[in-house]
Amino acid sequence: MALSRNGREADTCWPDTAGIGARGFAAPIAGVRAWYGRAVSLRCRRAKSALLSLIVAALVLISLSLHATPAFALDAILLNPNTDQLELTAKGQYYDGRGDQLQVDTAPGRNGLSARIVVGAATPGTNPNWMVFALTNPTTKTLERWLVASRYTLIGSGAIWPRLDAPRIEAITPSLGVIPERVNNDQKDIFAISVPPGKTVTYVVELASAQPTRIYLWQPLSFTEKSRDSQLFNGIM
Image (cartoon, rainbow, N blue to C red; front, side):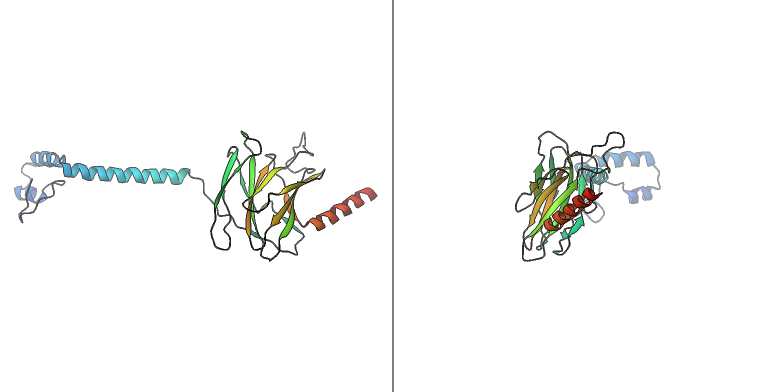
């Protein structure tokens, strides 16, 4: 162990520059050899090991930041009791390539807290596409809505062999409350949704096709009236 002039232990991880200066660099090679000899001390090895650990940790963090998929907070859609129709196509988050299970964070409720839910595909072993959205009911009554996706649409149906009668939605899973039930309809995929009063509910939609589709939220009575008027108009034409 080397001692400094004041009697304390000298820092053996670095060369004694004062001593070299006093010698006027008369023996630089010998000084360098002595420095490297002291550098293999236990104290230096510990310092180098700690520095190496910090470098490795920094590289791992950089790698994770480059390859991680950015997570976006899910914003809930505030339901207006007086709105008859609302398009959800551009208001949801879409996922693909996740296998037969999807893990998502729910939209935060009034308390600002969210939870993670895991939803399985209707058919195990498949790799469907998903859509996730959230609804907030600001009223004191349960709001009933129909989630509607038209089967007879040219959008995403293919130019050569259009799939005009292909199903668009396989199933819908809510974060809380009653599981939406399918409403019988020959031309559209319709699911009945109930949003409890004062609650925020996240819905995970398993899409039946990888092709894009337009999804709407309707008041049941308004949708029924519009469908009846459309059928009447088509009958006249």
